[in-house]
Amino acid sequence: MSIEVLNESGLEFDVRRLSRLARFVMEQMRVHPQAELCIKAVDEDTIAELNGQWMEKEGPTDVLAFPMDELRPGKVNEEPEEGVLGDLVLAPAVAERQGVEAGHGREAEIDLLTTHGILHLLGYDHAEPDEHAVMFGLQSELLEKWRSSEDRADQEPGWS
Image 1 (spheres, one colour):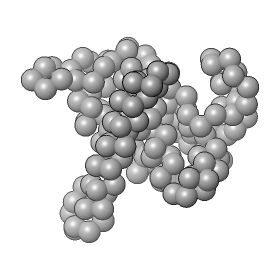
Image 2 (cartoon, rainbow, N blue to C red):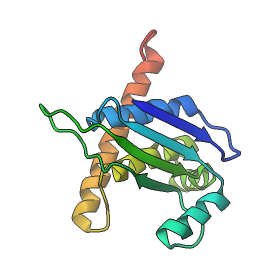
Image 3 (cartoon, rainbow, N blue to C red):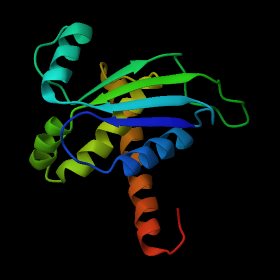
């Protein structure tokens, strides 16, 4: 998988960790191993401009997803589709505020937003109650597995 993470936000965060999370989520969702993803962290002015231009909403948001080849999660015993998954645009400053409000901090909020954004790139939505239940349930499951794998990596030498 090709995962590019660009930090143009002016705030520091662990870019390699974010790349590992994106790879983990994409693998869990059986995205083709040659798929491409770009994650760009930007400041609030930039994401507010993109939010207005593409979503017709005012002000900054936390994450925007721009799918490219309309890839979908792979199925067991089927070859996944090749292509470009798309672009995610994150606003770490917004994530920081939301993380504090939620009581889990900026890093956990960035994890949540990245996972949420990748699910959007894979065609998931949450406009309807049944879609919301499916997407947020899957998001929680993926984040729980991610935290568990990261805990093991921290505790076991050589785990990666």
